[in-house]
Amino acid sequence: MLDHAETHITQASVISPEHPGIQMRARRLTLLRTQSLAPTQKTARPPDATIKELQVDVEKIVNSLPSSAIQDFVRHVQPILLKNCSTARCHDSSGNHGFALIKPTFSNTIPQRYSRRNLVSTISVIDESKPLESPLVKMALTAHATTSFKPTAPLPSTETGQWKHLRNWLLQFKSAALPDTDSGPLVFSKSAPYLLMQRESLPQMPIPPAYRDAREGISETIDPFDPSSFNTRR
Image 1 (tube, rainbow, N blue to C red):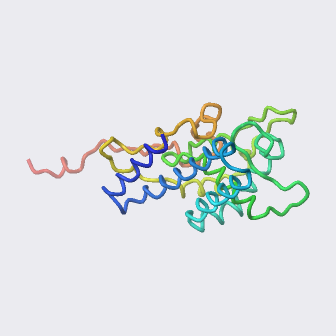
Image 2 (image 1 turned 135 degrees about the vertical axis):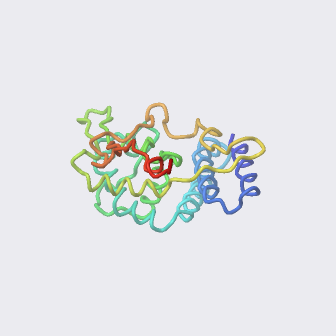
Image 3 (image 1 turned 90 degrees about the vertical axis):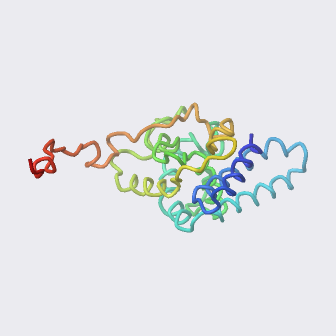
């Protein structure tokens, strides 16, 4: 599946080398190869070699991102996600939900290596075609913990400022439609759906009404009067 996706990306690069969406898909391919590496390489290589290779892949993914996306994640998005997700043990490093966040146990300072892995993990639950309907949105806006802790939404509707930070950050990952290839449209998510983080248990969802802008949902009044027909000489 990953080889098939790589073929599509290569073909798209030949057809439209300057297309802005190609780099995004190439970065997602690298991410999926990282996710699929751990279970297969552990039996073929010593643990140290596997860890080193995974670390290189994490660095490669992070370094390919715009600096603004990295800074916004560290300053705003990561604190939002860690506030309740990791605390409720729903998505901490010991969780079983696929998507996991790393949080220091005895310190309020998050090491850079933790932030980088949290960033890569977060990217894996972003839908680039519809970032505001990504599984990440469901995890941030709804209570979904199944532990003994009381389920709480990491981002309650009262925190409109934090939602704006998350929303603006997600929109940085929106990519335009990629060109068609000889094998058909380049749709990466269909090439390796089994590697995407918990798509069935964390389905895409529209933004809840409480988080929408006040002007959303207000339709413009359309005047049925056509001035062109009025001005036409008869």
